[in-house]
Length: 336
Image (cartoon, rainbow, N blue to C red):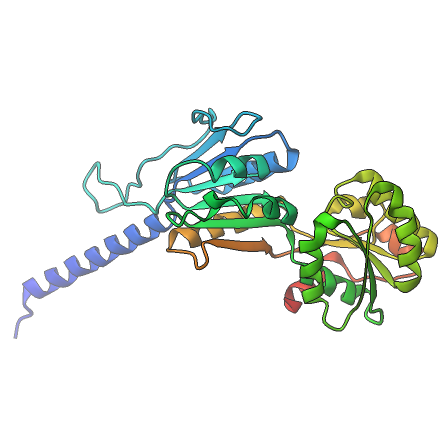
């Protein structure tokens, strides 16, 4: 018997069609347009945007929109080197054909841009990135944030308090008394810390102003094995942070925080998220929003994964032998 030549041709056509479909799917998965809103000259925000641009797929559009300092919407101005691509060419398609792309995503970087973004019209998925917990608390009651006609995600720039506790546990496994100096504005962060602090002896003291910080520390230090500086008005103030660090050093207690700056200034360690990690997570959050509605209206994510930063000089002064930062980062991640 002779093979039917038409059957071989049919199989070949089916194979070509399958390959073309796979190419289309792969291309569309990476062809999301990204519009980034920036309203300040913050160095960390600029680094975040740079890393976003560098990681953008060459087949997709990246547009940078610079807003004025008052964060009111401005005309879109694409940077000279922005990549603008309206479609993706694929092999096996006729000339000029393009691939459908994912829904475009808008990303606001920083608080000023976030405030502007939630007031702008449009239904594209919106990511508010590089916000502190207190930044988000200041805007979450805005009705425009929960309009219901577009998915919104919020990426906090600090890791969760549970990560900070996992780090302290890794470095001081026999210690459970944690002292926290806070302000009235930092109550949402304190509540998050309290929810995560199962098995910890948590002592929180509030400093109504900078002048009362020394008195608060005198109360807190005898009750504590370590001190935690929150990402609030104290953690954002260099003078206040240095006061806490000096008090901790005078009492021989390690001080933990949520920023690399605190570690460089004399803190023992912090779980942080690098701009590169934040850029990757922000892009993933945008893709998640583009897939469908968000339960509750707004999807809030803490920065993850976190990277541990340690001050070896402080560790030696405290007589501590610490694992490498990479090992600590892995241990914090595994505890999540």
